[in-house]
Length: 326
Image (cartoon, rainbow, N blue to C red):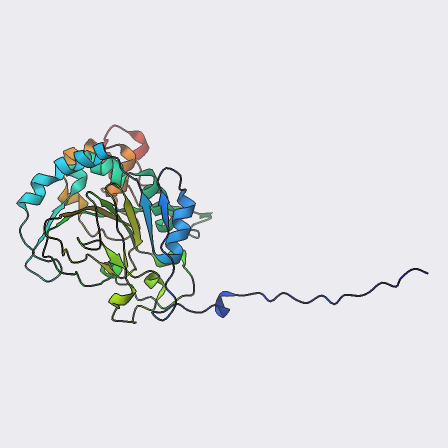
């Protein structure tokens, strides 16, 4: 006699939606800040890590010869800088700006680093899916652009910089979210160690996960900070919506030397005015893809034109591919 079939009741697997997920706040567990090596990490891994923690450490982005060249290019400008008279930067800080035109190695190997380009493309590209012009829908893609370039030299005696967000320049008013949303970011920053950067000599500190909080929540708490300690050539990428700040240099004789750049969306105003900050003849020396990244390319569909033409014609008047803003 054959055994009878036993009917097994199938239980529905609950589906977790975004509405069911807990909104992030300062009381949420702080996410882990991941570390990778530049030689083996993928852009996707970096993007995933940034979405969760808001920051990620990338070891060995630049080599010694590249660092030596950048320091040689920037040191005269640091020596010319005067102490900041406001409260944002300690008086022991020296800065250099407009690095696109002052160091070609900085431009190509920091602003133009392949991993950095991939990350900013992934997180700051905007796509306009619906733009009906008569009978035709014009899909437009606006890529990221350079936001600023700053070199920081922090000497012993410098105090903590106040924790702050860098995306305030674009007036965000975000509510808390449970997980990262692509439209949320106005910018991303990259800090590369020119010298060894430690908690004692002023390493950038930031609050992991604070890019997901309600922006009305504050003030930020120092006990939640992570210190991005770097060896020379290491990089630290951070979303502009994270609370962060430079730290006190409590050493007796160590300089904290950091090279930084930020990117923003192509349709947002740049923090550092690249057109006035840099000699246009220096811009002409850069490859075309980087010229566009600096801001000389159009933000599609047609933001930033000159005489209804692509501004790249200013740099390349004989190139027909730049002849029409469309």
